[in-house]
Amino acid sequence: MKPALCVFLLCCAQLSLHAQATAAKEPAAKEPAAKESAADAQAVVQRLFAQDIEEEELQKLAKVANKAGVLRQQIIEAKLVWGLRHQNTPFLVKILPEVEILSGSFDPASAAALPNVEAVKSFIAYIKALKAGEAKDAAGFKANILEAIWLSPQQAPVFIQAMEKFRLEAKMASLVIDLKAPLTTSMGEATTLHDVLGGKKALLLDFWASWCGPCMNLMPALKTKAETLPAHGIVVAAVNKDDENAEATAERIRQEQNAKMPWLIEPAERPYTKELEIATIPRMVLLSPEGKVLFNGHPEDPALWVALKKIDATIEAPAH
Image (cartoon, rainbow, N blue to C red; front, side, top):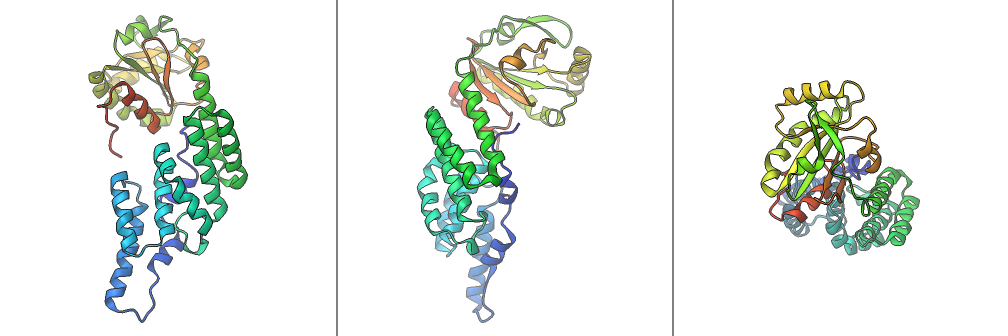
């Protein structure tokens, strides 16, 4: 399951038709300069909500938008959408005061992404839940995430994902994986995670199966990680979860992909699946040399790069 990339973001990926119309409004009697100014403001609003915009550009463009007369509400909405889209908890916490101000003056007729004030308040509660989660405050997380669901049931899938992630992280905090348990490669060779790690700083495991479309789609990204992360002391290995003919299937795909990383087979008893609570794939798990779980989630979760940078601050996430 890909956490918190949001049912909400389906509508955030672009401005609502109403918002575009609002940004484009211009009385027929406007002078050419005024019309040009209105068009410029509309273009700025659309760029603020662009999927490929990065944080630095967003912050600069927010100032431009303010000077261009773009509604403050739409600027705050754009920041909220960006933080949610990128699952950037520090950014969301930073803009929380702005979102709280927005909830007190929200005008649905001028909205660019949010349908009503209840949605604004639900995301305020959601951000507070994320903040509590960062502080390991279980009671605070529970109270705020339940408030978020109550305020906006439509976004319940988003908030439930956050709940599941919080619970999983709490369980993983005390888990230690046995790195010396036996397993095999796709070519039938005996090995262990300890052997694969080989004294490096960390081990990044990608759990996949041939029948998993998203897993196969992410193979190029996996290969890129395997090519770049070893320079930072992080070993990348693939772990196949096919139920039938796992070794032959995994080896065939290894050759098709021309993969150079360790290509492992999870034992039929599924020890890692059970311990790591892998209910869905693709899944990546980052382990310390002691077997502690440093990350357990979807390969495209930005939290993976946060965990990797804790090992080596020079690691850079790929550009979107």
